[in-house]
Length: 284
Length: 255
Image (cartoon, one colour):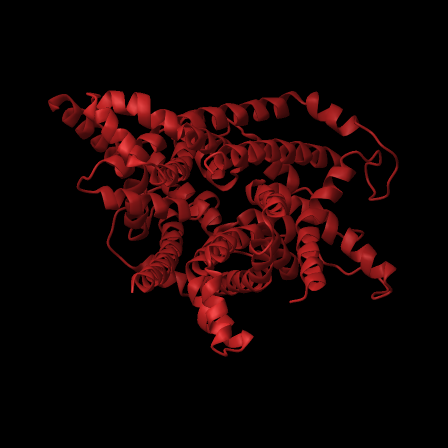
């Protein structure tokens, strides 16, 4: 018995030590760096000032921040609106079919997003598939310049992130107890009312985690703008990367990263809230 | 929604998801170098890939990192899952919450925070730093997958083993580990794919001495469409698909 207690203590200490070193430690260092000053290449002078955060709000940088948030918000909403009915269809499909259809969503979910973003070039190119289809349909007379625009980045992000919205939504919709929906119908609720009052609240954890898995990467996936957007478009991710690797202003880059972590914290809070609200309802 | 409308909508979404991939794979066999016109079937681009020594080198680096980090992450992740499942101790809830937060963290936040850590410790960026970074990336996925599987267990089996005189070690070695094996293996394949697919974290945590495949693709892709890249990406998709099907098969066994 003494033996196993010792074993237990060693294991728990090792896990906690690992977490402190690779999870708490690095983030604490970034937080500390964000309060410091930049001195020369890749060097942080410790300090306790908020000037990096204030600089983030200056018009030149604030514009990047805002446009990135705006773009990520748009991507999230489009993925949610397109993904929700799709996930609902998947969840209502009968088992042998459903597993295959689900597998077809899981494969792109795990496929390298860079590879998938690259695949989008052949679609959006001047002589790409999209232009050829539009030309053949007679909708346009000359190829549209689709690449290297904000629209291309938007499409690329939606393409890369749609599976990340669909899978959590599917998980929530599959768990949804159909009896609640039937009860609402029987009590005379219209389909719209059933959807708003019953289905949406019951699948809220899936909605929030899907939004989180789309919104946060949509702020950070710098390669999408590199591949599809040229030099013009900029995400928060491009900005952070440039601060770390080009401008070598680590404190400033750290401040941007902390801002992103704060956004994540806010979304996690929403997730936990929707989750506990749901489990409380199940018990009463 | 009517049935045909549902089928039409689902087909449209699948078309959106797969059309670019199919086009890319088809063009990886196209004999024409510069145009999007079909000029006949060729394996030339795959042949070029195989004879590109530095590319093969990067691919081997990637496979090595993926295999080693998946193995290490499986070990740490499984032990963590078992600990939070079996024992009640101070900090248990914290560990659970931290795993979840780590899993949700955007890659860029993980990447730069580890870069800052490695610079603070003045470690040279290369194999070891990338390995540590990918282990950090993968552990939460393994731990949460294995923990999910453990939740479905019958606790009486462990109690019976205890009553028959098994110690902590025996219980782990002969009861808990065999029962969790499918989830552990699924976690391994998941980690392998995560590591192989990661661009952002590798971008910050590896150095010029240790180039991996996704970073190589990243520098190639910025130059636009090229048939060799099509072939390379098609190969990457194939590897991922195999790993995903294996993982799904392993996870399904529990039902």
